[in-house]
Image 1 (cartoon, helix red, strand yellow):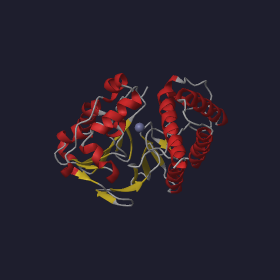
Image 2 (cartoon, helix red, strand yellow; image 1 turned 90 degrees about the vertical axis):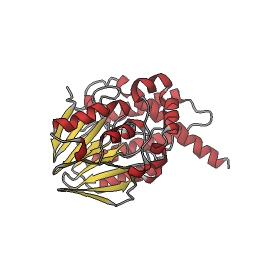
Image 3 (cartoon, rainbow, N blue to C red; image 1 turned 60 degrees about the vertical axis):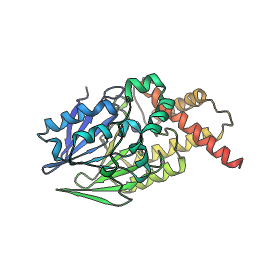
Image 4 (tube, rainbow, N blue to C red; image 1 turned 120 degrees about the vertical axis):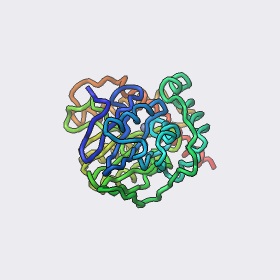
Length: 316
Ligand SMILES: [Zn+2]
């Protein structure tokens, strides 16, 4: 049973925004003295849950000085615009390449409808409210945000998409990884180590960038990974090897395909690849593949677009 609000350590609360199912998507509330910062917002319907997390911590909306989103995909940043209306003193921290999508979310919304389908989009992501550009900060790679008792460092993390950064927290030596360091669900624990799989979502996914980012993050030797889907995980170097091996497999499967690429066929191949990886790490129970169905469908879509881009480039 996953609690909606879980105090982890070092003044960090994990908020289960209950997007699609419990234990799937998190936002994080970081306390720093009498101030607070959110990392990730979840999709638009998450706003009441985020505000409730403040009340439970004895914090006010006025005490929130920052809202950070790792990238602009709507399961991470969809609530940002609406949330800011409730937080008079908060700036929004987003990668420079993501700004235009939050100021005018129309393209983001249209893109998400294509990727998820209109019905699922309306039922889960809901939409997005534009963010006032005057409230946006765009930290560059290595830039820091100093809070009482903790230093947050922004790290460029392309691969999952181009507007992705990760955030290192000095107090916990933890990394808020967004989708740059894969996905891992607690339902599959019990093997040698947790199952962790890449997030290769459309439309900007790039395998080589993604592998480089994973290597860079692992080299920081964090103690904790706060995966949006769904940490925290105690860091193990093997995670980076697991992700790298799977991405190498994704590349092989993608490169074996010519146009037109069948996404359902590619999805079936990714399910098999993930199953074999689960076997290698001694995952005990037969997994319920339905829990991965959306991820591996999105991964196949992103991989197909990556391959189509390469073929188009090769054709000039
Ligand atoms: Zn995500």
